[in-house]
Length: 252
Ligand code: SAH
Image: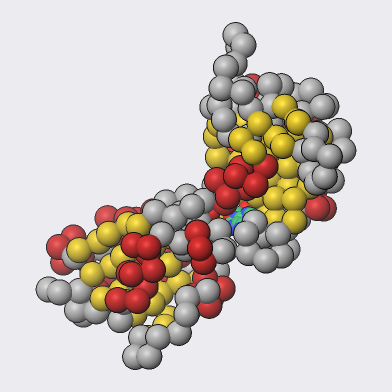
């Protein structure tokens, strides 16, 4: 069986931030599989088949990639950012676990990418300089009560929070509720950063506080970062302040 699946992370948007190993895997693939806007980010290559699908069909997409590989095709399955962060790598292993035994003999490779929180952090300075955690605000794959419980626990434990999937047309109220929960747990002055479309040409970054943060500011392309009581701002004469979280933390 010569087919294979490479699960590759394209990074946050700028092609310069895609790893060379991913660029090579994309060029070598016979079949490209992924969510429509992600497949669109890959330059066309003659003879390569492209299978772009809509959002929310991750498991079907993973099964499709594995089926193509079983037929002997060299498949590249693309994700934005890192494929292991709220993306396709876990869907592939979910499909593998419940799929036909033959799939377990396939060569599967996961190639990492720069995740949205890393790209946003680099723009801001070093907000993730100390302990942090990443949470998806989407309640498509977990109950909303679980999101609330994890938000309270993470804020209470003093982590900087990277909130993925903060809002979409189908999920308009979740970020507002999340901010309410965080206001009850953290000082009003805690930095809240809205980092939208980082590195992809339409980038926009707003630095607010918990007191001023407007949930309407976020959309599907926004990563929301919540600082801790230790996160600091350094004003600059031009442009937005640097944001960093010192590597030393006081007693919890
Ligand atoms: N695997 C991706 C995350 C997919 S979940 C990664 O590692 O980055 C989709 C969410 O990621 C979006 O709702 C948004 O919160 C975030 N995101 C993806 N690309 C982004 C970008 N360029 N700028 C800001 N946030 C981004």
